[in-house]
Image 1 (tube, rainbow over the protein chains, first blue to last red):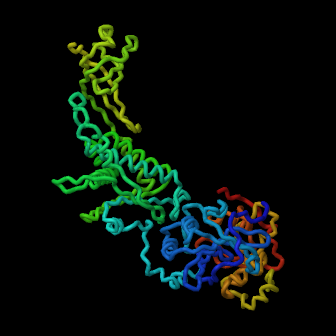
Image 2 (image 1 turned 60 degrees about the vertical axis):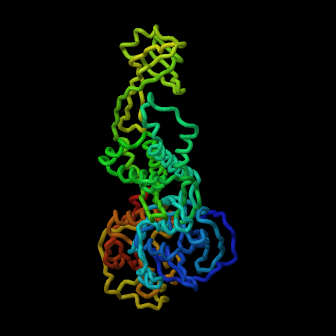
Image 3 (image 1 turned 180 degrees about the horizontal axis):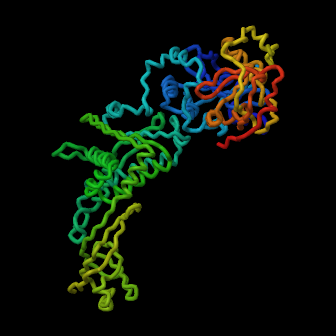
Length: 433
Length: 144
């Protein structure tokens, strides 16, 4: 192996902008490999050995918060997370010769660090490797800090009260490089926002689209803009983002308040979504709730979870209404998402219903016994003729109008995401001219 | 009494390193982290011989005396586990510690050792004429 230091893209600096003093070592083996230093203001810095050549040792020096330090010592966060989330998002790369004299120093962003300098993502602190750990705890007063397994999430109600508006907060975390302090891969952020918005929109339709619940043959024509205004209730707008790991705030664009229960539409939509979140963690509860959900909600929820699982991220979702001080919270890790996806996949579903259509055939095929029909509403149906009718296909034509009864077989099998619908014409009577 | 291999260096530490009641002659199987190139000169050198300036990193005489001893393990899987863990934490440590494990049989005349800790690690001080390179051979390379 050629013994040279890995090249790093950064800005050379003449000297470090601080003077540091060692407090203790978090990793020591035949010498310090990871030390905690303090500046003259008492801030904590990590000095991490990363490389060496024949002349120099290379160290990364970066400031970390006391919470980060405390969480690392208590195995609530990983070394990888520390190195990727330094305060001010900068890392000093320092090459020191064997006498400890700095030969070169540069500053760079953590995402400029080569992969050879990064620990594996799940590496945690090991007490037995440390030296003077008590000095570190004592000096920084770490024993008085409360550790939490998860990174802090925002006080959503406090945040909502600032603007006196309902707010939804989606807090995204990951143990990989895709999400770090104040930064997120745009592909991930895009997918999360899109998937949550789709779920919100499908839920709005599930609650407010009363017309969709009427059998198609009896369904009145929709009023102009009816569907659009329902969809608007489920529309969210991005308000702002905060760094920590990555947090976005959304608010409903429009809302309506129902007189009898004084609930806003967005509150109702969010409660329905959170009911789904909660119920889906248990297969029996999910089966019970399923009867009240439409296909769109289940499909968009499926997509939402799939991305969490595939991108190996975890998400906290919070909602707050400053009017009634209601807060609802839930969270998903990639492993919870995986469990819920299994539950969703194991929902077996079979349903048969008849619908009556008035319209005319657009295609008839006596060989394959198939049809395509357009209803007066402009909906197109295609499928097969029943055994009883297939011999008489020649009696039908493309000019006349018919009252057609179509049997719809809806099925959803384990392991599939979508409900499939099969259409079979069981009766067809020509309408009087 | 047989002389320590690095007694002249130890004398410069101005520490009362030996005799140490925790160190005794030993007759045991031992494992050492080595470079994949078995001829790497650092394979059987104590840390202070590789880099004398490292003395500054050690706070007291107890620790400083250890700097002229070799880190060995009494258990192969524990030696392997620890090295694997270090290479996962800091991949470039392969330049310092290597990525292989060598096995050798220590005999009483070779030197003195303290008792292995819970991770099977112990420090071995070589006697003047000891040459561990001839006693050890690589048995395993770590694959991450």
